[in-house]
Length: 290
Image (cartoon, rainbow, N blue to C red):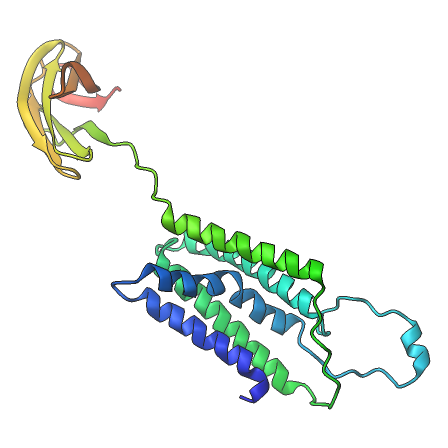
C-alpha cells in the first residue's frame, strides 16, 4: 500500500490490537477504555466514510462559467469537508454499532466482549481494505490539497461531543452495577410412574447471596405426606427429591409442596401444587389437570 493509505493501515492495526486484547484472560481496565473508544465510536464509521466519500481528482473544465453553478454539497463518491468526515465517522459508527448489536443478539455468542471486539474489528478491516482498493483504482492527478479549516463553533461542538463520549465511557466503567435481588426457585413436576404410584419431583435451587436453610413440607389431599426439616443450600446449589405418592379411591389427587426459610419458619416462602386425575379401577395417575 502507498503512503496515502497510512490511515487505513493504522485502522487495521488498531482493530487487530483490540481483538487481540479481548482474547487476554487478564485485561487492565484503562487499556480497554483506550482501545474500545476508537473501535466503537470512530473506526467503523471512518472506514465506511472513506468508502462512500473517497476523494477524486476534479474533472471539471477550466471554463470559469462552470463555477457559476453551485454543485451539491454532498454526493456519494465526491470529496467532503473535514468537518463532514468527523460527523460521518461518529454517526456511521453508532449506526454500525446498533446494527451489529442486532446481528450479534441472533447468534449464540451474544453480546459479549469478545464478540463485540471481533465483529467491529472485522468490519473495520473489511471496510479499510475496500477503501484502499477503491483508492488504488482512482486516477492520481496533481491537485491542490484543500486546507483543513474548522471554525470556533465547530471546535466547541466537537469538543462537547468528545467530552460526552468520554464521560459516558467513564461512568459505565467506574459506577458499580446495581445488585440484583436474590431469590430461590422452587418447583414440583410429575415424574415417571411405577406400578400404582404417582411420582413427583420436587426441586429447590438457591440464587441467594449467602447460604440459606430451608424446610420443605409435602401434603397429599391436605394430609402431610413427607417433610425435610433442614436443607442447607449455598448460592447456585440445587436440591432435588423424588416423592412417590399412592393414589386412593378418589378420582383426583391434590399434591401441595411448601418451602419455608429458617429466618421465617412460620411463613411459606414458596408454594406449588399439582392435581392428578386417577384412572378408574386401575388407581394409576392419568393426565395432569393443573
